Amino acid sequence: MKRKRFTEEQIIAVLREHEAGAKAGDVARKHGISEATLYNWKAKYGGMEVSDAKRLKALEEENARLKKLLADQMLEASALRELLFKKMVGPAAKREAVAHLQTVLGLSERRACSIVGAERKMIRYRPRRPPETELRGRLRDLANARCRFGYRRLFILLRQDGEPAGINRIYRLYREEGLAVRKRRARRRAVGTRAPILVEARANARWSLDFVHDQFACGRRFRILNVVDDVTRECLAAISDTSISGRRVARELTDLIARRGKPGMLVSDHGTEFTSNAMLAWSKDHQVEWHYIAPGKPMQNGFCESFNGRMRDELLNETLFFGLDHARTTIAEWRDDYNRSRPHSALGYLTPAAYAANLTATDDRLRNPDQLRRSPVAQPAPYGVKPAEALIAAG
Image (cartoon, rainbow, N blue to C red; front, side):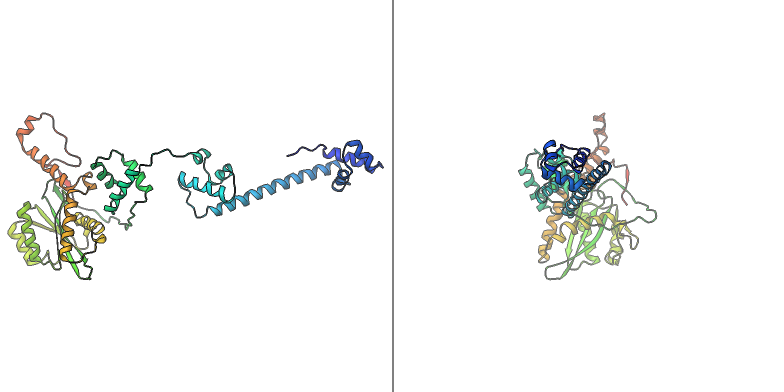
């Protein structure tokens, strides 16, 4: 602000000389001002005392300050209206908001940063990370091939292919590429107490059975009988047909036992196929314990229900079946991929086949006394594997 040559007291003293009878030209020449300036002073301060002039000056300063505050508030309100529909979460979003205010409203960087609430150093910072184009491309291709996989499973698959990047970098690239898959889940609350069924940690300790329904492109419906090993999480069978009776279930279980061995227990709901006379006779002939869950309690058959959800999410909702042969071929390929290639989070991100192999190797080592004598120090069990004598709650 330009400094004035004359204060209010001096201006009023000059005006008093003029009012005393001195000519305007003489007064102006004496004090080194023009006559126009003298008359302007007279129009503004004529008839005023020194106290009145000071009060007028204070009012002018207060008025100027209020105008400045009002202008600042209006400018901030206008800036906030510009940012009304912008998410300012994270450094990148704040940089974009500051650049928008500078471009649209012509604000300075300091003012825009104060409105947004960001540090100027953060706004000026430019990341120097490498573009990682190749890794981004591999991640996109893998996510497109496994469109229902999250970043954890994609990280496991990349690590199996020899990628040295850590999970935090994969998660950052996963978010930057917009590959996140949102899944809405209903809130479920536990009611009452639960009594889990104790199951020995070995293969074929307990199998779960359940049906899944879908339809072909023509609209005709078909069914899939899923058989899951509750300990190893392997899908032992996924039998699809337009109609599956109790006799068909008994025949398929007989073939499955011939290939894999007899289970310690079978778990299912009260479906007519599982409660038919054919299934009751089969269970008695093969001396297999059959456990039926409580009516309206599908959580008691949680392992098979979880597998059905994965099949529905990753296969049935993503595939259009044109016939029974096409459905059987596609389901068989997906089942083989599920058992041998898909990482399972409940198994420490091992595949069900790898987990079953580790479990069998651990059980064989514990049952072989010669091998135990040869190794004085106990070998560590694989991740997530407990000894065969230990019982786990799998209900």
